[in-house]
Length: 169
Image 1 (spheres, helix red, strand yellow):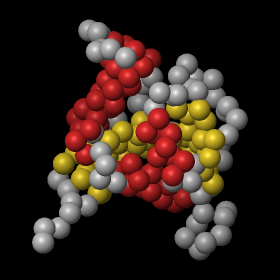
Image 2 (cartoon, rainbow, N blue to C red):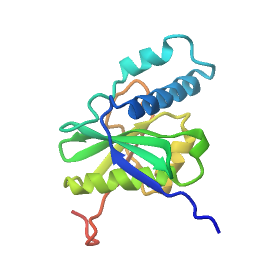
Image 3 (cartoon, rainbow, N blue to C red):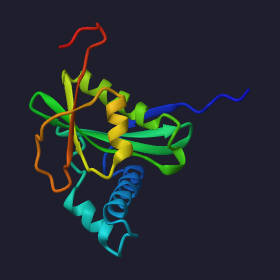
């Protein structure tokens, strides 16, 4: 019997070549899905400039890269806010979807948030990202009133985190 590949995560700088590759793939998918057509020349670069990820490093945030076995497979970021963290850039490459990567990334960012003393994570997402919204709901994120006014924010979620001792902070 062959062992299934496991998911591992590690922090990365957003300017690391693997991070740049995944963030470009993430933004390319966001552009294509939003416009419901192939990306035009320069569109992904413009989107990356409009919504930069350079703050996903200490002290303002973090970026996790996920591997499925030896394959570079996904990413997720956190931005530190006063008393909470904002989840962003959750992405699993299409060839790695359906293998638990989204759940692994959520667990990893939640663990990192708790380690810094943060007891809740919030996020906003678009209406067309139905798979992402379902992932968040399945993993304990509940819809909340709008907390941000981003140009693509149409649904807002929050999860209260609990510490390993079993009690909420």
